[in-house]
Image: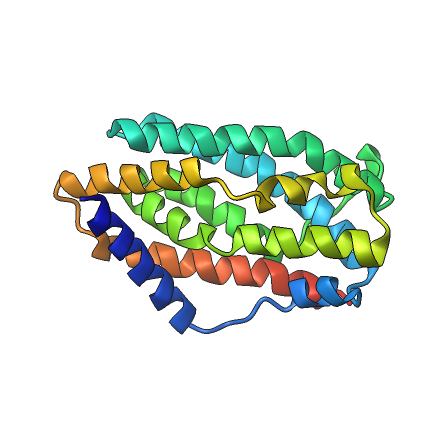
Length: 218
């Protein structure tokens, strides 16, 4: 059955790529062309996103009916908790104090993504949320690896300042395997994945909106 889950996930990811859209911020950071203002906004926006997603993933874990599904969402929530402290170091490297982060006015185009994740928890269908979130995890690690390298090369950030992105850039084969096992168990209940596609498409679009809202700051 895991083969079926993997095939489904690969198909959905290909469909999302076919939807079009380009992340315009990461290439700017990679070349050193993104202004410091965009990095500061990235730090402040992520501070709010990580806190929101942490709560959302814990809620999805509580809603989940399948053991691997609960374990997956709980593990992802734990990762958000670990990342939050590292995010404070990134903000400091950008020149932001905790008061600066608290006073920052978040941008609607950046906060649409976590708002939609929160909506998925309110919809009370963790099966749909599982597929949507798994489908949109694919590129995040690559973005983080690119950003971490660029922050060192072009912006002079130290290891502490890059730790947030280093954390997500490291491959997590155990988490990937857990996600597939969770999807496998959900499929075994007779759940039909077609109903989750609108959520997967919206989440993908909101993620691109996040990056491109920041790209437009420069």
